[in-house]
Amino acid sequence: MSSEAFSVKIFKFDPSIDATPYYKEFLIETGTGQSVLDLLKEIYRNHDSDISFRFSCRLGKCGVCAVRVNGKPVLACQTTVENGDVVIEPLKGFPVIKDLIVERETYRDRLKSARPYPDRADRSGGSSVQKLWADPNASPFLCTDCLACMSSCKALSRIPWEFPGPAFFTNLARWHYHPLDRSDRPALAIRSGISHCTACKSCSKVCPKGIDVYKEAIEALEKKP
Image 1 (cartoon, rainbow, N blue to C red):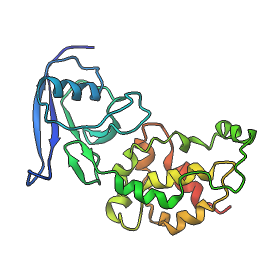
Image 2 (cartoon, one colour; image 1 turned 30 degrees about the vertical axis):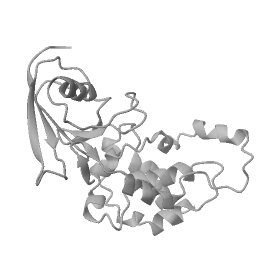
Image 3 (cartoon, rainbow, N blue to C red; image 1 turned 90 degrees about the vertical axis):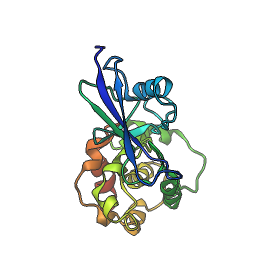
């Protein structure tokens, strides 16, 4: 970890008191090579305790620390600060609650219509469940709902009322791959507007878990059984 001064600009906006968003700049002299989350915590402790951001597990498993760093959606806990200035912003396409915290409840409410659990008549389980983890097509199960893909989605930014976004369809694909699920997930995907996907594949490029969202969720659901 090298120690050199660099600029950090952080998006600031409190809808209850601010008319418009603005950026607050800090000159940081702690070493580069630390995580963005550690950088935010350092700024909070030593420079501005009014900055708001979310984090939980710090292991890249919960997804709640997702922000944009120099324009790219990332997990703050898994992204290191390299040489050069840094701009930290909230995920794009979501209402800002305060600073780097965005409103996620609308997405979660919409996801409920997807029945995000195995829909089956037989609840006995069995060893067949174990086959899921050996299935190379099951990577949607790695999704943490960090919503980085939603922040980069061109279709979602254009017609959010008609297209629920790649994270929604990744959740559909998760249960589409489940060996015990009996719901017609492709049919639900069609009713939910999957045809509005522009195939830009931005979702796949930014996924922190390396999921090929377009191929393993969008294309998989568009294929006829």
